[in-house]
Image 1 (tube, rainbow, N blue to C red):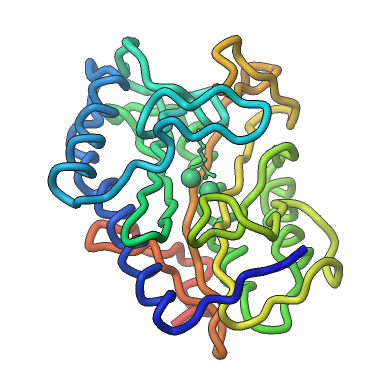
Image 2 (tube, helix red, strand yellow):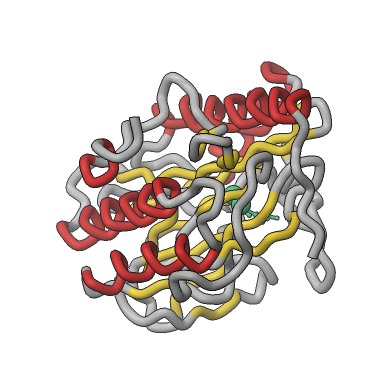
Length: 271
Ligand code: MF3
Ligand code: CO
Ligand code: CO
C-alpha cells in the first residue's frame, strides 16, 4: 500500500478544496425543509458548485470498478439509508433525518464532507441521539489523530463510543485517503483494535466518516446499484470530515463559516 504524503503546496490546495466542499453544505442548509425533493437539492448544489465555485462535483459519473456511473452530483441518504443515497423525486418530510455528502474537485484536489440535517424539527429522540452520538464518534476519531497514532486506534474509539451507546458500526464502508484521487489508500475503518494498523505520519490526508446504525450493523444495496440501506430498516447516521495529519496532531480541512462546533466531548482535548 503506497500512501501519498502531501507537500506544503498540495496541502494548501487541499485546504481550498476542503473549504469549498464545506461551503456547499452551508449553502444548501436553508433549502433542507419539508417538501423539497432530494433531486432539487442535487440541482441546487450542482449549479452552486459549477457556476458559483468553479468546482467539479466529484460524484457525477464516478464509476469505481464494479459500479455503474453515479448519476448525480451529491449523495442524500434519508432515515434508514446508510450512504450513497441517489437524489430523486421523493420529498423530504418533517421528522426525517438526512445526510448530505459533498465532494468537490478544485485545482486537481478533492474535498469530501457530510453532515446530518434534521428536517423541520420534531425529529424523534432516538434520531437526535443517533445524530449526536455519530457526530461524537467522528470527532473522537479526529481527536485521536497525530503522528504515531495507528489506524486501529481511530477505529477503536469510534466503535467503543457507538457500541457503548447501544448502536452499531457499518463495516462495509470506511474512510479513505484523499487528494488528487477521490479514494486513495489507506482505508480508514470505523472499528478495530488499538495498537494495530498503519502508523500515521505528517502529510497524510484522509477522511473519517463513520456510519452508525440504531439497530444492527448489516446493510443491503438497493436495485439502483448505489443506495445502501440498513437490512433491519433501522435509522442510520453519518458525518464526514477530510483531515490532515500535522506535526502537532490534526487539522480539519473541510471547514467553513457554517461548520458545526466540535462536541463538548472533545472540545477540551483539541484546541
Ligand atoms: N462521498 C462519498 C465518500 O465519502 C463517496 C460517494 S461516491 C458516489 O466517500 F459516487 F456515490 F458519489
Ligand atoms: Co469520503
Ligand atoms: Co463523502
